[in-house]
Image 1 (cartoon, rainbow, N blue to C red):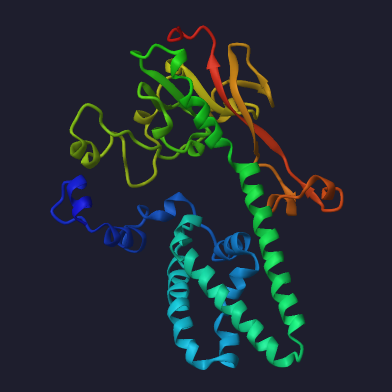
Image 2: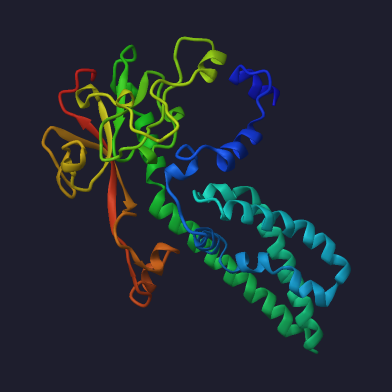
Amino acid sequence: MMVDSFYYKQNYAFVPLNIVLYNIFSKNGEGPEIFGTEPFTYYLRNLLLNFNVSFIAAYIAFLPTLKVNSHKLERIICVMAPIFIWSFVFGFQAHKEERFLYPIYPLIAISAAFFFVDLFGVLSEFVSFKRPVILGKILAAFIITVISCLRIISLVENYSAPLHVAKAVSQLSDFYDQSATINVCTGREWYHFPTSFFLPKNFRLRFVKSSFDGLLPGDFREGVPIQHATSCIPIGMNAKNQFSSDKVVEFEACDLLIDNSIKSNTAVGDPDVWVDDNNLRPEFEIHYSTRMINSAAINGGIGRIIHIPRPFQRLVPTSLEYMNLCVLKIKDDKQKR
């Protein structure tokens, strides 16, 4: 609280309380629901996607314990209670995001571990030979490990492009005048850029007008003490997620552009960059490009959930559509050496 109070220049900045007040007691039209709403099943699908069968096990971990060791039930309840409370509170909020459940991820893993330990304890009472129980443990661990690894590979393969693009931009400083400000622009792909900390010292992230009509992020003030920069509200902010023209720059001010390779939809405000899919206008050139799944397309099958090794792709129905996430250079760049 002392650190928050210092950087926000407030006598008492209790951030957890502010988060609760905003998410639960905010005014109509100024709460988190303005950023989109999802049904309760959103979190069910999300947890099942990230934890597979372990998610189900975590929420019923007390069942096998009733049979094995009732004294152990108190410890399991201490683990499960925060899971249910957190799930209930955030599950009934209209606005939902995956990151809202991050704090209970460790508890879900612990609770699932309790379930499987006690489950095999119950099974051992009904099986006279220990070998089937041991084989069952090995098989369960193997299946969960394989599914988890395939899920990780899928995330890296389909969604790591923004990190690779950010790294590519960070390595461009030697190609530009170190004393000049280089504008790295993005429009419809603004939400995929990880952080400005990846940018060289003289590079600045800028936004151009695009099909996105909500409130864009603001900049910290430069050339002022850090306490003033962190406590000052950026220009053009509002509590209603309304677009502010103060957040965007003219396209001509851009030195680099981060964009996907899907045909530009100029009718909704996207810059005229791509004539067709993967067909770039002549005044641009690609500096770096990497593949990323097109989440806006209709991607069917299990291939979007877990990685399907190539030898099995004919056997497992899947249909994925990809696009390229690119760093584009504007030709005849005045800032280039």
